[in-house]
Structures are given as C-alpha cells and as structure tokens.
Image (cartoon, rainbow, N blue to C red; front, side, top):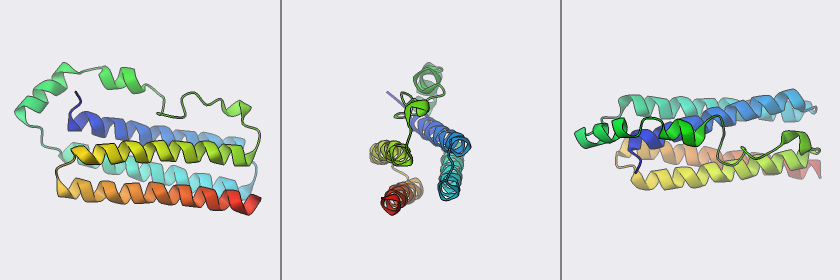
Length: 154
C-alpha cells in the first residue's frame, strides 16, 4: 500500500523522467519546429514536477501514514529508478521518423494521464484535486499539440 506521499513521489519522478526524455529528444531531432515543441513539453513537465513537489512539501502526514512511510523506504526508488512508466522500454535509436517519435510521446502522455486519474481517486484535499485536474487537462493538451503537429507533417 502506498501513502499519498508515495504517490506524489511517483508523479514527481514521472515528470522528471518526461522532462529528461524530451530534452534528450531535442538533441537528436532536426526540424526546428519539433525542437521548439519538445522544449515546450520539457518545460511543461518541469512545471508539473515542481507542482507535485510543492504538494508533497505541504502534505500533512497522519501518524499512521508517517509510520507506513518509514516502512516503505526504498520501494519507489526500486520501482521507478531512472525510468518512466512507458518510455523505459523504448529504444530511441530505433525510431527513425518524426511521426513515430511523436506517437511514442503520445503514448507516454496517455500513460501519465491514466496514472494521474488514478491518483485523483485517492486525493481528498480539494486544493490538490483542483491542481491535479489542471495538470491532467494540460497533459491532454500535450496530446492535442502532438497530434496537430503530426497532422501538419502528413
């Protein structure tokens, strides 16, 4: 069982990993239009990570939850490591076209949305729930932007 603190840690790690992947993709892509979109995506992921970190820093842990937190010291690090949920198995050297790269990012964004919608079910504090809904909407906008970019290349 994970505490709210643990779930926020997962969200922070997902955003950090997403930011790193988008920044890595910038170095490997050629079209200037794609680079600016990837930079925007990296900045969005960084902002989301900061928001989750702020929520984690202000989270009040109940006594039982604080005890459980001590009982699960390395689980998240072992589970997440340096990997994201969907990009950990992607070999970017095998992706040869921009549309394939964009499809990979859309898949990552969809996985992120699913996790955040799951996380939302456990959030009781209205302030966090409102912020999480905003981030879900922004992640959905990322997909819309990626699809629009792919359509313009067809």
